Length: 550
Image (cartoon, rainbow, N blue to C red; front, side, top):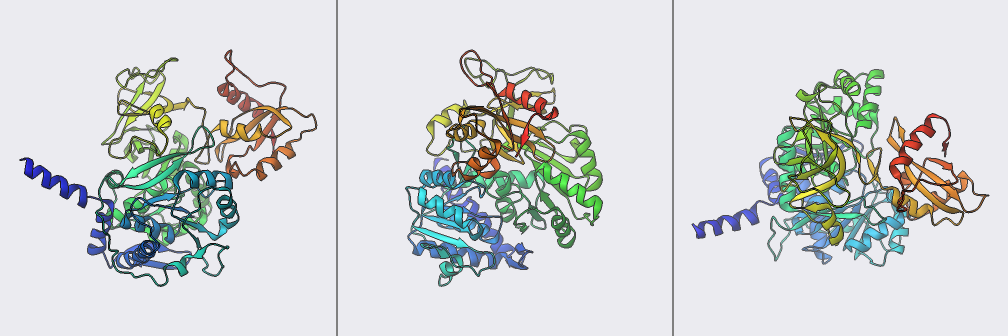
């Protein structure tokens, strides 16, 4: 029996990687379309996609890039993103897609944290990338420019993607090492409570089982075509109908570089899409456009949304106008989605985050001021008592952060991820999210931490102090709002707007859209800023017209 188990372990650990799943589909579905870019009217079968991947993989090997080296890319949804994702898997490197909305300073921090051997960027972002590379202490071995029009010359020190792969072989890469399900294959950065983002390292088995989770919950198969309208650098972009599960299932990805509701509806009708994935704000825009310019959406098996709950009235509208098959997932970068609402749950369960996914354990535990509750210290399942939402997702979570033991200790406890989300649950264990312990702002699907924005604002010489919170917004859900105590009476709202736009340490989507000058900001007895009180104040001030919109 022992010999048998050793043989099984060796086969399982070496053969059950994500890249082995991809290669099975190259063999089985080589003639089928794997990737289609309508904007450029280009498509790749699985055989052709594999050849493109091999060219990039072999070019990187020739460059000395290999096992555990980081391949960082800041790209919009595009074919090169897909090539890079699969190529890194092939050579045992670590995929590291980063948010294309970050500022130069934030990108530099990410570069210094992960120390990429290769950095691939979109020509559209070249000015920001140039600043980031200048600011970063670590210098990537190779910087590659991707230009969707294939006409522009790269900046000094960079090479175009076409030039980089031009002479590389499209044959299978030859490695002098074996790949394992335990290899780190992807590293995703998620928002941190300070300027430093947290890096989530995913192993190959995490990626395989993440794909399985999507495949069984949609469900998804090789006849399906998907289009994820959200950025692929997100966990929900990459792993929910993006390259990870779709290529693993043998389906077809239709690329949408940037979301446009009219174009999205045209693609659904023209290309007979099975699944479309987007934030709730995307569904709202699609609904408005469909009511104006109705398209045939009968091919849809589902529209999948994540990021925030669906209100009942909105859900009914989406089901009526778009498709009855609306899905809603809730989760984290660390663990993909962990609760799920299926069409048969809606609209009755609208407003909740759903019940636990098949392989996950989701609980609501009590909250204490001086300690965190044990996983068995659960709240009443009465839909009333508020606690912290915790989850166990051993298939999809690495249970650690890269290069960040302090945050690992803070977030993981006794096999569970402590989310800092506040919620209730009912007798069927359906969870409803009530708020966030850490005061994080979610604006248009992006996580924004007030303390990071406050740190930037407080460096302005004319600011004595500030508190950052969120005001409600119909389109974005929430918008960043700053209350400012002046150090210099001459300070204006326009100066603050200009200061934030010019700061290399804050991304454009994180800068405040509303301001108000105040004489003091709310603190508790121990000197901690009361963000919860500020949030209530922001909603009232917005309703009363006291906030200044920049």
